[in-house]
Length: 394
Image (cartoon, rainbow, N blue to C red; front, side, top):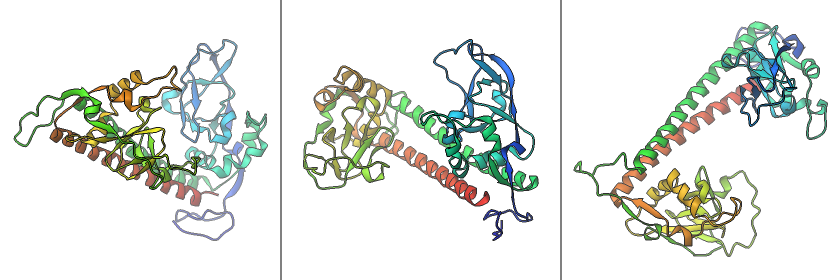
């Protein structure tokens, strides 16, 4: 690729292509398709996801009206959501959804010229769909871009051969990203399978002599975890999340609306377990890798002798334990359910000897490291794609 200083050319360009890009209307690429289909109660429906996530089958909570006209959509057509144009609701109909249907609120278009991948990537850029927000029709809450307006919108494009080259480049990059996402999904499914088998004791670790460890002991949680009630306003703020466990509050993309007076905040020490008392039934708990402080709304626990908090952290994420937390939470509705230590300590839990606890904890920690590395690979590829998009389009 080469840089160029001409006026209507991108910053990055494949070798062998010259000349300025031309401004064209979307109508030079697309023509609207209106093949009548069935009504709302019989149509196999599809929809366009936000943020360029593509065209997918529509999950329905009700059949739909017999009076609503649906239109057939063909594989390879471009679709957009009128109401979600400003949220990047664009996609190409996949082969698997050929002849699925949508209403006129999600119109479809046949390609009459140009490369489909090139155009799709171009209109998914903020510089396209956000730029034209001021011409959207409708109320503030229901702004929409109709078909005629969409087809009249301008884009800069090179000749077809260069469009094709750019489209192929991003298709290959997307395949790379998809492959890495599939690897991530496989790792996550493997972890899920091991969680089920190990914590149900279907799969057991052996000791250093190849012998079975003793049977797991069933006792109340208070035998293994005690409540920590130290208070302090000193230390970094921590937060307990459902998906990531305990993290530094500074890593959250969230404004700190807490009181300036943090004298009543609870102390968390490294290897403690902390949980959100009102979200424990959703899995909001984790083992802390940090010293810090948390909101008084949280419950902080420390492990007793011969208890691995790493093991407990994973054990608390199992479906069986989360179900126990749910049925033991106090409150009339899910909005008010609360699980304090007073209730938690009386819940029974199965636990192996310390050595097996440590092996189990280390095993899942290694799996989490692999999953984290895989997520980083995907993030790097997606950032690279965004960089290329900014430099290869006008």
